[in-house]
Image (tube, rainbow, N blue to C red; front, side):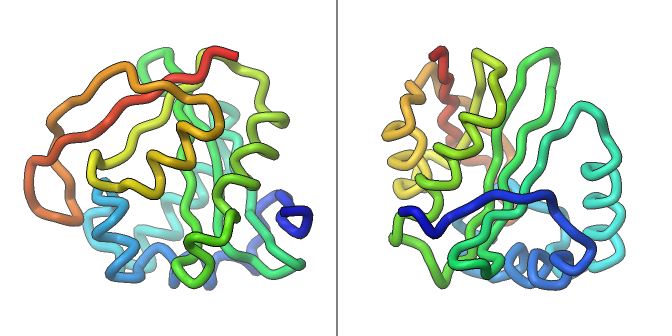
Length: 158
């Protein structure tokens, strides 16, 4: 998919990213989300921290020049983890896979980890197709579901 690109996140992206990250179906699927996806002030503080942190690499995902999501990585307990959020309007169209491939070229850190709710089949498929392998599962509290759920942990070594 050649019309998918990555670029730095700009102030002008924040309204659209906020709307994407509060879509109820996407929030449920992601499971591990902000305490209150409708809290714009918390979102703005979170995004400011991410954009200012030297330990975070984040990019806007565009398709045909239109913002359709975000992708990034951050360090947790010495491990670099990747995360992405793609607008539900383009799910199933190869956007996540194309953005992930571009991001993996941008970030040379290996191993690289990813996590997804174990029932998030689409995201797990995208990660496996990119070369991530399942290294385990954990039971964690998913804010969006207000429940403990199984989370799949994946690793990319190449």
